[in-house]
Image (cartoon, rainbow, N blue to C red; front, top):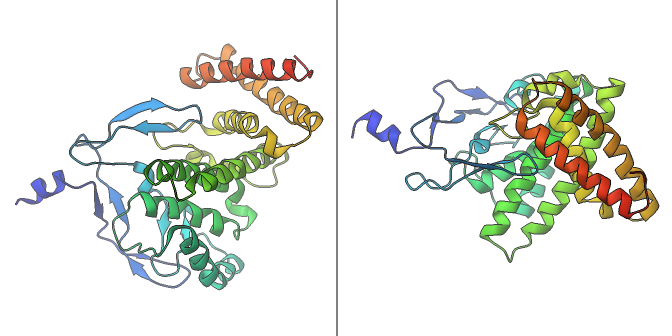
Length: 292
């Protein structure tokens, strides 16, 4: 079989250049996805800004998210490629010291993992959980908070898919926990956009939250409002606290809605989804006796 014919049947390939882990010095070849060739069949855009992909008759399940995170197969250090080597000594030591606990934590959830194997749904899910764990130990200079938010919502998508495939294992509980975690971290990200305690501009190119459209900071505002509405009961059990929580999210959403109406440069889908979400907020707050 020719090399071209072999490639036409594969989803991914290994980079020729070795990647060296800055934590444990492990050498490995990063896996990357082939572009084109009819591998991706784009479906609809979900309410949480996830691009759905249809199962490919030739290639089966294909997801570009599988290949985004760089993960060391030895120590399970995980990051976005941009941040792979940008570790200060304190971050490096903290992540190195947490290697055993990181492996134990991820294997309790997903079982034994081998990142020398080709990426699939389980390794994809693990890459984002590990990313959340490692960014928890990174300093403010790499803007870890918005990156944790992206990792959290992408991990939630994976556990939603895992629950669909294995409905009796309890992956839906992990999915909902991760969505709630994303809701909280997106709220923190909004605060950082205002107070400047982290250089959130550093995360602009990877805010996504998916890979086909980078909605950037507009996506942060929208997702904060979407997730706050979805998980208001868990985030604020008391009705009066829910009204305050929803009112705050609605005011931020209103600025996005207003700028979308005023600017022809805003992408159409997020403007329309923001309008629908804004109307839902009005109805919910009116029913709760809050602001209209």
